[in-house]
Length: 270
Image (cartoon, rainbow, N blue to C red; front, side, top):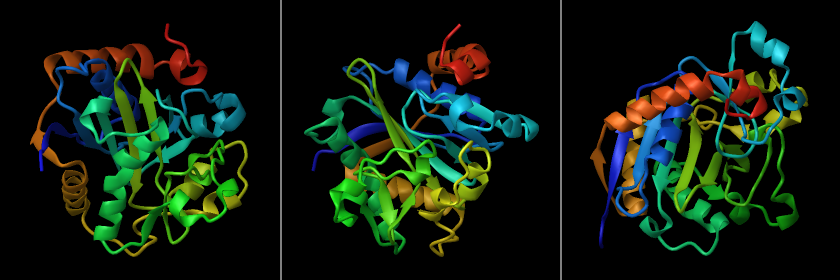
């Protein structure tokens, strides 16, 4: 088997705005011809909410409650619904389409790039499957909601019928950017408390590793995720730090974009 060389960036838990700035710096520094593909793992300190790229915060969030709790609200460059980030492992991937197994569509690339998560969950004894393989009635798929964890799309991952984590993708100039979450603890009810629509059923169909009886050390879980990624992507991972240029761009995006209400609340760059 031919192994593809990948950069592996193992970040410490960061402020949400810096996490999103770092992800975007990796996307825009990426050369689809010359760059090695990138896998990054990170965490969130303190907890934060992220909005999908095109969401209107006044419509989906109770901003007064967010402000009262000093909870950061940060807009992602990817689509999807609101996610509350706490006690989770988060990954991001940056690559060109030619650096992963051939996909028949953008949706199919989700299947390829989230396959390592299925492998990981199964390696720790969980019965994980894609929603499209679990749900017999295709009409139940493709449901989008303001709260990310309440929706079910084809390549969302289910364990015992409940959604675990969420994944979103963005394409830019022949570059694929994808990120997603692996929840260690289920904070769906906490996240729901910041939504405009707090319908209890939105949190009932979610799960986490702790809910599934998995209480392993976070570093061990991360090592098992890395091993699953190597297996599924035939990847040869090389630990890496951000380059000087990536660090500079990340700091610029942090200060000029992700720390501003202009971007986070209105989706505009000053």
